Length: 495
Ligand code: HEM
Image (cartoon, rainbow, N blue to C red):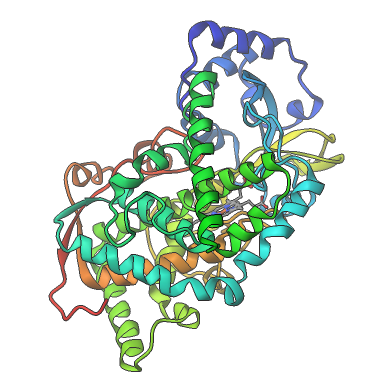
């Protein structure tokens, strides 16, 4: 996240932070507070891209990317930004325990109070909300029947690409991920006013600009309100279409059942963001890696042709149970989720009871109830003691069985977060990726186009992966535009 604060606001944020008492636990954990004054820390944290600062601190103060440190955090008091203290939990076992025991999000992570399932701090409300929509994500009952619709969208993409030579994969994947989410889980056709077979990324550009994890206007109330107003208008149009046509996807049905008007809109807002942004980023990075690794790309293509041809030969369409057959592709997806993990950290949480974390001496440090904390997922995914050559894209590395199961989840790899408040859409995301990638890869050769080709020569090393390749916006890891040449594969096309 890039701080676009003016000097006066920054000075006022730092002044308030300086006046804030340092909690006892901050003094017992490594981190910048042991080295710098609060003024200096405020300057460092607010001066530039927060992610770069965070990467440099974790590199300096954490042991092999997986110990606990104390750092500052940005929070909001209404629209007023402030700095607070937080524990960044890096020890894998303590991460797992805190993930289960303290699911409450910090109500101060955004300027506007959040009532949706992703962000609500109220545990009782969160449990109810999660319970009310979870059946929309059941693999065989709810997701499997969505496959034909997704296949149609992918077929339209392949036809469109046949007329193109080069694509901005960022715009393409965002468009199709949003389209697939709205057309299937919500059940609304032609959401951008153009029949889905003919739509292009231009049609969704304005909508995508409003539903994303970039958090552009957090410090500008007027722009933020404009953004929210557009969002409300778009959501209203989706609700109207769903009611008028009486065609409602499983998730849409559940959201329409929410009686409280404000929560209904809040829920849809959050789902429109969560339901496409992260999947789009992951597919962009995967296309990027395939384009710059031709041998891996060919292996994915060979597998795609083999699996799809067998399904075609048996005279049927692809089914949910076919998805694990894309074994090598699944390794590539898992490796992308590791190396380019979208959520290097998650939305900040607070402890709901007293608890303990360990310091490097192995001593237990008391963390009182109400303490802000976050996890360091990036660290686990890039720790040198947990992975061989962690900064290299290597789908052939030795994964554990649970990392290649339906959705990866181990102590060292948890791109969809950890139970109890993990991703609800993980099976949907894995399904979309395993439907879209094989069809495109079997039909097109990919190689990097300029200016991406020049940028891709950047040596991939610690910090550089994220600092140079990713946009300085939002808490999530997302690429710049990635330009890719697409050349039709000279085989009989089965789409
Ligand atoms: C590759 C794709 C995806 C990745 C990497 C991903 C990752 C995550 C992560 C890390 C969280 C935890 C966030 C936090 O605690 O702050 C999360 C939560 C969530 N995700 Fe995803 N996600 C993906 C796709 C999706 C999709 C497609 C949907 C919906 C269709 C979805 C819906 C949700 C929801 C509703 C939550 C909140 C769960 C809760 O708090 O109970 N996600 N996701």
